Image (cartoon, rainbow, N blue to C red):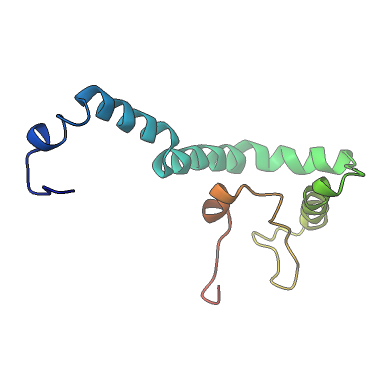
Length: 119
């Protein structure tokens, strides 16, 4: 930070080894936002090709219940999916309260929740 125009070898390596920087880059690739987006793309592709046909059939057969209030948002989300299963809608109506908190990881929210021009 004190010498932003300096050469990496002269400024950074005396403080942090080259191997440490390589390890940090490797770790970031496996845990950073680019990695999360890649995983999301793979999951979304799998869902859109195979699971989209199978999940509704499985949900139609199963009943999910829980007495634990922590799991209520997930139970509500599953009920919502089951209700709209056969409608062909790609998105839930804006009038429908969609449970997000306690269902979607905060780190995945930007990847999963799509917003229109009105937010």
